[in-house]
Length: 71
Image (cartoon, rainbow, N blue to C red; front, side, top):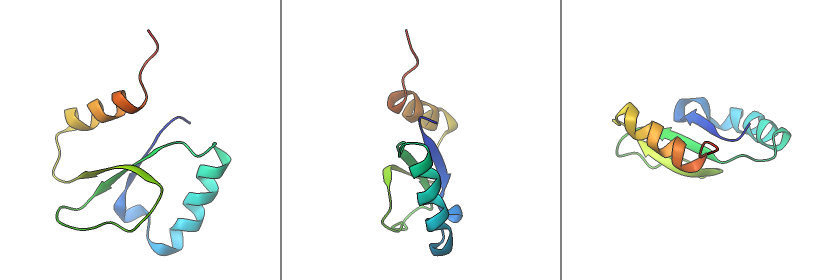
């Protein structure tokens, strides 16, 4: 696993322990958090926060930037 894209709704306080276990198991890959507009997300292991609404192409560009495909 090279990157995790995660919806803010999936990281309620009780799920954070599970998320930390999954990230540890996979070498702590970077995490992109998809967040609600005008809402400050909880502190977490997010390398990037993408706020709604966003275009799918914008998310694809972020993923490609963070995990480039081999030449």
